[in-house]
Image (cartoon, rainbow, N blue to C red; front, side):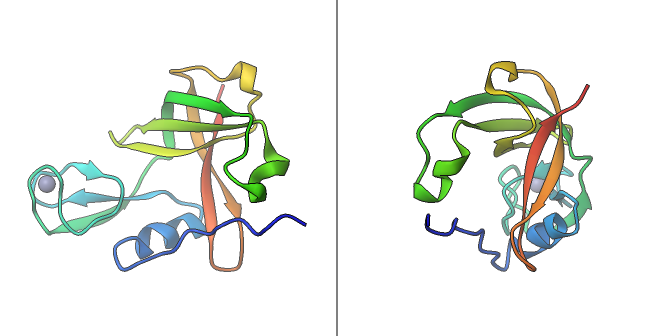
Length: 135
Ligand SMILES: [Zn+2]
């Protein structure tokens, strides 16, 4: 039996983000100083250094910026899933996130393809966000 997959660990700065994912929502921090979204969650804005931010629900829509098809798993826990796609997604809100592209054959993945977030429960507390192609 393969080892268990590692789970995300929510900390003080990312707790709201992971709670949103569990509730089937991508939530992003938006700076109250310069009004820009940021990802990953953090205490200080990387653009203007403001410590004030709000959490807003993102659209979950984006496009593939880049991707790779993994034929060798990142560890034994992922061996049953190869080949899988790891992608950088540009969200409509202007931030770039890394995730898996799912419900997509590797040969069908394209830079620039429109995608939307989907969610996968891993436990009673933790879910993951992934992306699937949209027509
Ligand atoms: Zn800012």
